[in-house]
Length: 377
Image 1 (spheres, rainbow, N blue to C red):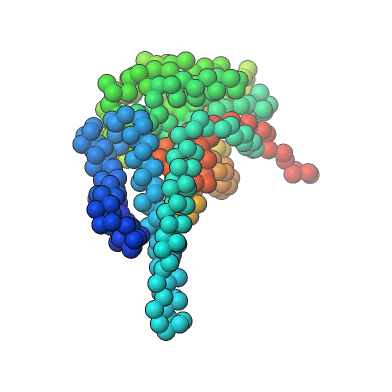
Image 2 (cartoon, rainbow, N blue to C red):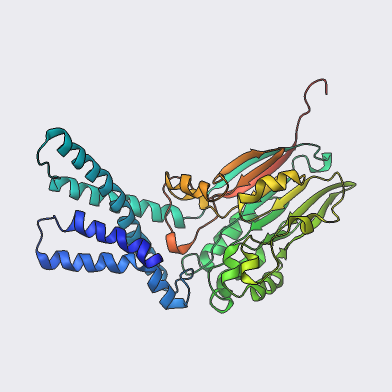
């Protein structure tokens, strides 16, 4: 499916952008072959590792594939727009109106520049984003409580150990009370990724480092990864909760497995199980990799849901399609009933589509504040 979906845009680019250029036939044929090879990036990924989700090429080659892949996608979109303009011109003028060659050169140059920017934005160390969330009936002991959300690290050949160490160093320097990781930590087997995840052992926060699985955990030795996360000192919350305390004040931190878990033969996403036995009246923070079930969480009394999965939509325009596939949620804070949903753009993203134009990656530091009661209440 990946091969067909991404092969068609490359054929369109070859036919409408490359072939009309006044270049030697041999040169155009060579470039056409390169475009077709680049369009099959996911096939080469599967052949290199057995999965489209974990390319095991050298990092520079993965960067090059993503850049070329981005050029193809951007050129296809631009050319469709130009072809619409040409068609409209023909209809208006009633005659022939061919596309100037200069326009083809210009769109090719623009696509190459934009794709390079998109790759750079995708693989950089994420900047800090500060978010304040007001919670009704937040106990005084947790007013001003700070937590850091990491998500969608997708540790891989594209995001290897040096990148992980840099993220860990930045995270530890923020001085938060709690660190949570809302899924998709890895892309690859435990044997392939052991060194890349090792720096996560050094994450530190007074109330610990807690995580849930994302859908990518189920692509690669789920049980082995869950054990390894625990061995790294990361506490896993699969359909369960823990209670954080400040004196007599309590805050519930709950986590659920991914919506895809049952399809992988693992314990299904179960919010009721995650909340069972939680102290009555204590606000609940829920970790749920995918944001689509936020409305149900709100009906269960959750105060704040933290999600990822969408990567913020990655591209302006594409984010609208990503939102449609995720219950209308794609990036940032949403009011869902009496609950706040925060959808993180991702600390990183999948190396199979490592492009960002618009929605930036983020280290998300969230401060909890007691919601002010209306005057006279």
